[in-house]
Image 1 (cartoon, rainbow, N blue to C red):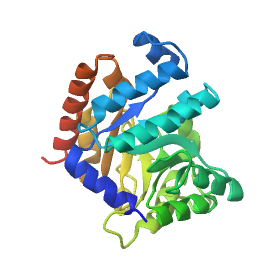
Image 2: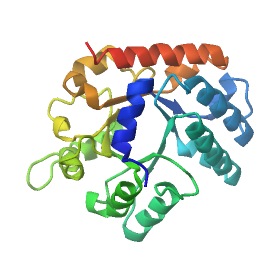
Image 3: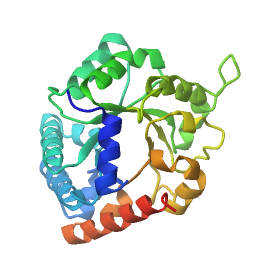
Length: 277
């Protein structure tokens, strides 16, 4: 059995810094790099980012949808780049936002979270809006196999607010209730493996993030409007828990690998040091 994901991520951050590099081979991103909008183009795009990130970041975050759109060839590429990233000492966080009920969630767990899974990732984003209890097959498999989950709590997109800030019958926000429920799985651990997704553009002051005892994946730096200074001012009390992620703010300097490496290294240093002050 491999070590728990929360511990592995903590060790990786200590060696390689705090940044998570998103890999999003959209049609526009591939065009920007003069690559074909194909599985082959997505592969080349991903390999360049992995080479640039290796040794200069802790985590890569492939967005599954951008590979799935190419059918089975895209899934083959996704599987390949996950393996290559692991060989490069990068943790792989698959951004797939899976989440259903019962046996379906068990099937997702089998696909991604076991050490023998066909698509070998270290962690997976999941959506809890069929109920946190429905995520139990994913949670149990992750904890058994040293994998991690990042559960959507608050997202940066404005469309999500009507659900996420709605109140339950007891008067608590839905997102706050989700956060409290997932925090239970990390109690008593030095660093838990059931983290959350909390957008960098959202004010966290009314949330129990300090009690999560796991990592907070925080998208939104760069193109979505948040700066590293925003991250520091909003999340200064949760610095050790933060896993900031960026994609387009890095890839816009590509496709030259040296320039990508410099951009990743610079942003990683900023994201790492800003929480050490």
